[in-house]
Every structure is written in C-alpha cells, then in structure tokens.
Length: 407
Image (cartoon, rainbow, N blue to C red; front, side, top):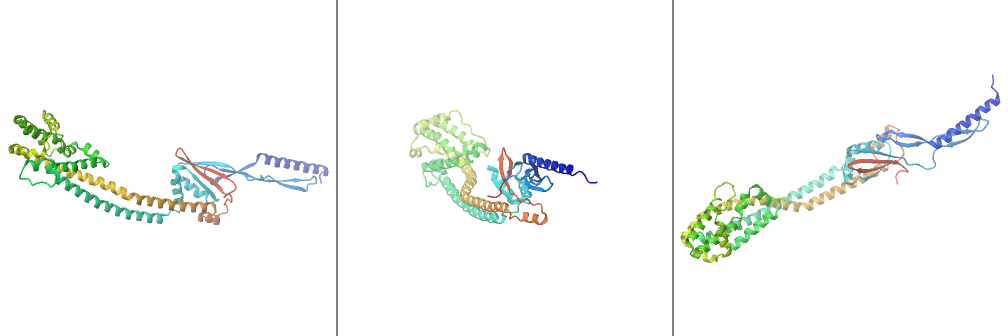
C-alpha cells in the first residue's frame, strides 16, 4: 500500500536538511586522520568529505566538498635518544613518502649524518679507506724522518755533554795525566745549561724527571752545585788557609761520595759546607790559578770527582733516553698535523657530498627502498614530510610537518 505522497516529500526534505547540517558541522569541526607509520607520535591530517544536498523533489541539487581551500600544515614532535634509532625511523618513513630533511642539531649533526648514511647503505667506505691509507703512508714516512732527525740530534748532544764532562768536574785541571779536553769549562757549562733548559721546555720531561725520582735531577745539576764548593776550597787553599782547606775538602768529599752508590737517595749537605760555598761565591778564584794548587790537594779531589763524573754520565744517558721519546713524539705530531688535517678535510668533504645526494634522493623520491615498497604495496603516501632534526639537552628531537612538499 503506497504511502501518502505529502508525507514522503516531507521526509525527503527533512533528510536533506539533516545532511546539510552534517555538512556544516563537518566544515566547522573537521575530521582528523592519523598516519601511524610516522613513529610513536602520529602525524595528523584533516580528512575531507563531501555532502550532497537535494531539492524538495529528492533530486540532487549540488555536491559540496568539505576540503579546505588551502593546504594546512599539522605539526608533531618525535624524540630519540640515539642517532641510530632516529636513522631507523627515517628509513621506515622514507618507504612511505618523500622527505625534506633539515639537520640543525649542533654538535650532534655529524653523528646524525653518519648514522643516516649507514642506515641507508650509503656510507662511503671505499673513499674514506683510500684517504686513510694515504694518510697512514704519509704519517709513517713522517715518523721515520722524525726518528732519524731526533737520533742525529741526540747523538750530537750526547757527544757535546761527554766531551765537556771532564771539564765540568775540573778533572783536566786537577790531574795532569788526564788528556786535555777540546772545550773549556765555560763552554761545557753553557752546553749543560742549554740541555737543562731544553728538558724543561719539552712537555712532560721535567715533570717526569723531578717527580719520578729527584735523584736524577740532583745528579744532572751536580756540576752547578759543586761549582761554589770547588771555588771555596780553591780560594781557601790559594790564600794559605791550610786547616780550613783540609776540612772543606773533607766535607766536599763526603757530599760527593753520597752520589757514588747505585742507590737513588737525595744527598744531604754536611754542616759547614754552605760556609765553604759562600766563600766560593763571594771570592771565586781565577781558573788559571787552580793549577797552582798543591798536588796532594788535587789528588784528594780527583778520585771522588772521577766517581761522580761516571755517575753523572750514566744519568745523562738515562735522561737522553727520556728526551728522545719526548722529542720524537713532539716532532712526529708536528709533521703529521698537515697530513691529518688533509685527511679530516677529505673525510668531511666526502661525507657531506654523499649526504647531500642522500638528502636529494629523500626529497625527490629516488630511493631504491621507496621504489621497492611502491612495487610491493600501494600504501605509499604522496605528500612530502618535512623533517627538522634539532638537539636539546643532549636529546634528539624530530619536528614533523606536512606542507606543500619540496621547495
């Protein structure tokens, strides 16, 4: 049984009004769709629908789209604790849409860049390997050159110190049977002073010598500390103070004998020896007059000075070994510096170039992983995802937004 035509027309009109209200409500509030493939925090996109209105007779009047007139941008933030996890997320996101990437994470930018290159299998291992091989070859050559130059320098320095050893301890003056040395004591003293200054100037050497065992530095500087004592004894002897001279010689021999044993203990200055030293400082003798000293007095000084000289040369050889290592390290570091800079610059250039190509591929849909996904599934999003990587308090944050795509 057919219904009342008037009632039927009224129902259709009421339905049209309800649909129009739904359309307006959709435009006012919008409907949001989530993109679950963009990480733990979804990126939201406005879902657009169309509503069909009708005339009173039930015929369609118009189809009205609720799609906004202008593309809107919707933001989201994803955080990562490691660059590797960020790169893995980016790899998955690149399977679904093109990506416009911006790295602004300060000191962690290189870390993120390298993680992305590895994740997308674009790490330039071959190029970096060639640069490293070239650096290692040049570095080895520099090390060999430095070792050779240091050895020549140490040999010359050792020779000068050995030649001047007898003069430093007045052996050529005290004993006529000892051959004359080709240098004066003043020249030998200048060589020793330059040697001590160099030990202080080379990083770590002076600290090593003075903290590891003060005995080494005491022996090394012994010719300088014996100088006022020897001058004091000579002054007393040359001025006829026989008893004072004998006592001064005895004290000096006690002091020098402390360095003869192989033990490494700091020598103590006998009481009264400082007075002898003050005499030598106030009235140093003419070195030529030292030869006028009585032979018995000179013989008393020769033996302890010979013993101390041998000990001094032994310590000099030990110190030269420490200096050799320190100088080699310093010179090699200086020689390697330009090669290391060239290698690092090459690394940076290669990595930046390959990352620029990766960035372009992400933005222009040229990645193999995206093409493979498109062949295997149809769930590829056509919109471009703008990704801004920033760093805050050590953490990595990815700011996402969907806009008009690559610009």
